[in-house]
Image (cartoon, rainbow, N blue to C red; front, side, top):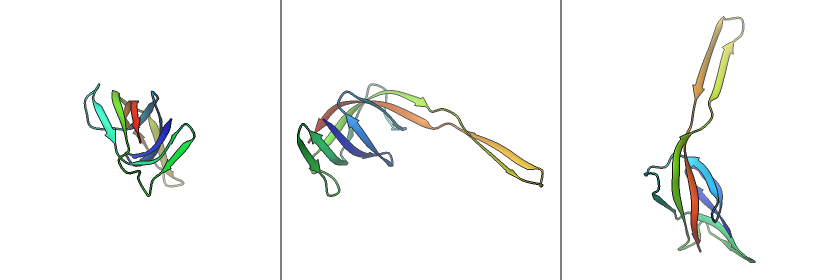
Length: 103
């Protein structure tokens, strides 16, 4: 069984007992997060498609940890102008484990 959920500005494919990294979600570690914006769900041979969301469906996840992603470096320059600058960025992430998918 899996579900497609709209969460933190993205569409995520979540499977039961699977782990996923998402943009930082407020909450403590070992806390519970409930996503109600379920777009699509599949269980065995049946499909559920939302318009845009499936009514009364939700996905429950446990917060495993808050981490930071790999550093992304943006190097910019202007040729023949002796201008260059380097900017780094690390995204704040949350690791989730899917506990329950209810359709």
